[in-house]
Amino acid sequence: MIADSAQRLKLVAIWLLLLAVPLWLPMFGGYMALGTRVLVLGLAAMSLNFLLGFTGVLSFGHAAYFGLGAYGTGLALKLMTHSTPLALVCGVLLGGIAGALLGALIVRRRGVYFAMVTIAFGQVFYFIAFRWNSLTGGDDGLRGFERQPLDFGVWTADILHNPILFFYFVLALFALAVGAMGFLLRSPFGRTLLAIRENERRARFLGIPVELHIWLSFTLSCFFISLSGGLNALLNNFADPTMLNYTQSGEIVIMIVLGGMRSFWGPLVGAAVFVLLQDYLSSLTTNWMSFLGAIFVIMVLFFPRGVLGMNWLEAFRALQGFLRRRGSQDSGRLP
Amino acid sequence: MRERILPADNNKLLAHAGAFLDSGAMTDLILFNVTNGLIIGAFYVLMALGLSLILNLSGVINFAHGGFLALGGYIAYTIAPYVGFWAALLLSPILVALLGLAIERLMIYRMYGRDPLYSLLLTFGLAFIFEDLTRAIWGATGLPFSVPDYLSQPVSSKFFFITEYRLFMVAVVAVAVGGLFLFLRFSRLGVRNVRALRSFNFALGIFLAGLAGVLAGGQLSLEPTMGANLLMPSFVAIIVGGVGSLTGTLLGGLLIGVASGITTVFWPAASDAVIYVMMAVVLLLRPRGLLGEEGLLS
Image (cartoon, rainbow over all chains, first blue to last red; front, side):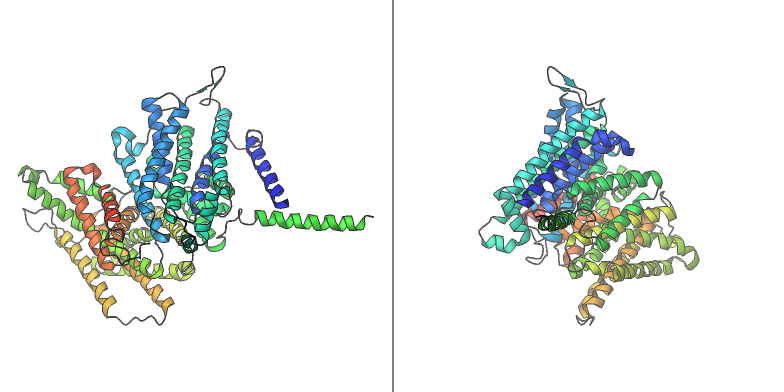
């Protein structure tokens, strides 16, 4: 009961903090696009964590679906439609369906081999984006599209020129996706995924169709990450092949580990830390890749459970317990 | 930019082959590309065998393998003026293997038996550091690594594309692979000390990467990303050949090399992607890979 209300409090705090970003971000010298970028990559990390943290399956090739979402959205805007939402739908469908098809092929692999096969398949899409010059622009990336203002009939939201409006557009879709993930994880389906993560063999003995569940989880996470990829394309009005490369996958995985992979919100925190570090380091030194690599190494060697995400809840509970003890002492003292 | 060094080189050779192409014979063109494919496949094999050794014994996918490969090439480039080509060919891989041993002893051994996520991320970070440091020390632009003149002559005028260096490379790879198989078959490196065995095994894998780096340096120019470019095809070679089988890795490497060589003839733009299509087909029809042991891939 108390844990439940604490949970609710945390949720309210998180959403208030996110809604108020345009108010407090400039105070710390941040610019709006940085906040939007954190949100977009946070959604990517949370999408992958749906699979990694809550189903226990390691995909190291999710950048492919992230990138497919971006290219799908960009190409739709460039060639087909002037509707931003419709373009996003195209991107999500492209990435999600590709994920569903490939997922069916690899769902029987486990552990390190699953990772290896996902990386290798992810590279296919990288090569397609890289090589298909006439469609994708090849190495130079996909240009020539812009996110279009949203027309609500009575009012047009100019998300192209107003970065704050675009932030709220991204936040709305982020909320939709994260809400869906949270709903799924609370449902019996989500509980089954947790059971598979905890003990696959036992889940199998209980008659749970493990492969089907892993495939569903993989596919769902591909759909979610495609959405974040599409939003990324809209954010930059640009998509390039490195978005699909396995190095991008590695960056998304490290965001998850940074924030804590057992925590629902951890990946968002990890993405924030990662984006800020990257922004800061790349302005500071040309050798920021080494620093990034060093972060990976230090994380794995010394903070495998995440610097931030790991003990938030425990710390909160500890604080709560402390407060409650004090409270009871107080009440004991009072007549 | 990434991942296209070998195919680009392939195309360059194709362009150079103008006179040869005029003779028109399709079979010759295919022969030319099959030879190319075999040579590229030999690189895949050296790289993939090292990865496979480490994966099979320690369960670690070494993302930094390409970094070691590039380092092998660059160290050979640096020491060759002092010690000569032949000594560099041997010395550079040994130095790289020693570095690999140190890294294994310091960091990688902590990952054994843990969630594969961590070894992936650790070696991934190391790969970043390797590539960046290589670029900082030797520069981002390609460096030429010259081989002795007597190795760079064509074998015959008709088959001008088969230089002696290419034959030499294939021979070195064959010797290294043969030596490795004999060693694994007959050595009495027992299971008494698993810890030491894993360290030695890791260093052996890195030695192969370093050797591939020196050989590749003589064939292509040296670039910081040259190793990372070979990493993905090596994964594919391992998966196609079958995880757990070194013979499978050998077969897989040659097979995908030849496949991408032949694809270059008919559809150059797809020469990168074809190996992944092969992998998909293999996983669909024979999930454990061509020679893989049952159950190891799952």
